[in-house]
Amino acid sequence: MNTPLEQWEAPEYIQKEHSVDWYWGIGLTCLALVGISILMDNVLFGIFIVIATVTVFYFSRREPHIISFALYADKLTINDRSYPFRTFVSFWIREPLLENNPTGAVLALREQRMTAPIMTIPIPDDIDLDALHELLSEYMDEEEHPEHLSEKIMDRLGF
Image (cartoon, rainbow, N blue to C red; front, side):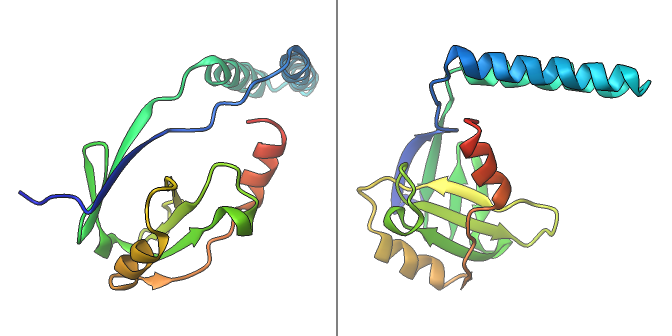
């Protein structure tokens, strides 16, 4: 059987503590948007806003699932799903000191499918970033994948 070169686990997202004011802000924003949607005679948008707000509240309280990552010589597995390196176009390792990233280094992978988002994977401190870089360089190009503006905004808003 093929043994992994590296394997680790990480939460699916970093859970943040939210104050009561944060919940009030989200709730009041929801009410304002629902009111606007009713005034504009767009009930469907109002229903969407309510569902989105309930979802945000749910995920803000739920504990994140733990995801298993395993790095092999020719593929990456996430839980039970395998991603051969040939399905990726490029990679970028965001180092914590360069990106002011409190969660540590992050591996960003761009898939060949144009509709697929950039996959970001947290890298624990005990993994050798130079060895990881060398391995991935054999299979795909290195291309900077900076944090997207929407990620920065969502982080700033506490999501």
